[in-house]
Length: 410
Image (cartoon, rainbow, N blue to C red; front, side, top):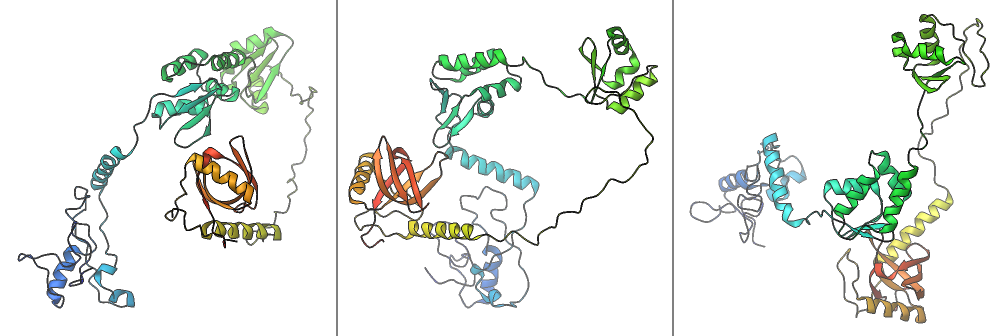
């Protein structure tokens, strides 16, 4: 790296060394020239290059505003390229242009949304990539997400189909939707499931009512319903001798009495309520619960579990590997083929050695673990997980790779 001249900062385009902005003669200002340093720093320090990849975004070539104060702390005495220059905020129009430019640059890097899924006979649907918004929204109502990753798996259940019917969809709408967005024929079990749930949906109705009116003479209830003054009560006939109301019991009593009727209030058991003039007293108050000063102190079990988890994570990240193992960058998982992974697991079961593996769970989260394999069968490996400090079972197809540990790893 060449000398920093004049206190300027930033790289002015690819291949150009850090230094002062070239003048008309093609060379930067001398390092000892204060005027040259001031001129170059005011135009280039802390600002992006005008010929960089973001040259077409707003504010890409705008100079930063100088602070105009002398150094007053050790941090202020650093060179200009070690300071953070203030950047003027973007206006609403500039933000819109910058957002459009970012979207234009990111669009080629993102996968194209799909308009289809693959229906399977086990009441699941596989989306081999990101779905279009309307398709993803409808599938989110009609099915439950079972696993995520490179492909999303949806599962159809009676509850999920009932949820779609509650949202206003009919059985014919669901059949048409699946037939239009599936690259495979609609399986017969899925069609039977939709028809069976739709046949039983809505046989029972549940609603809310604040009060009710009952009378043995249904002609009286018909008279109440026909009266225009009863519109504010929100009455609806549930049975020949029962009306449901949206008004509360007290308001219903007053409304019926204003219409010329003489209703009586009754209890939940059906007995007539007798009202008495009672003195109004303040109800007893309970003392408020004391508010603790802070979070509860963790007990010994929680502290021991936290310490064990920290030590297990340190073991998984710092365990040395054998020299023959291909090194992986920080944060990357080991990569081996399926046959090599299976052979290494089976050998570790016989020798009792611990292995370093990379594992991706059903949600697509990757992690590194140190395990001691116990048994390998049926596409699964049962092993003691040093990271979790317990025996667990892992599917072999979710293990990205294995690596043997060094002999002195223990």
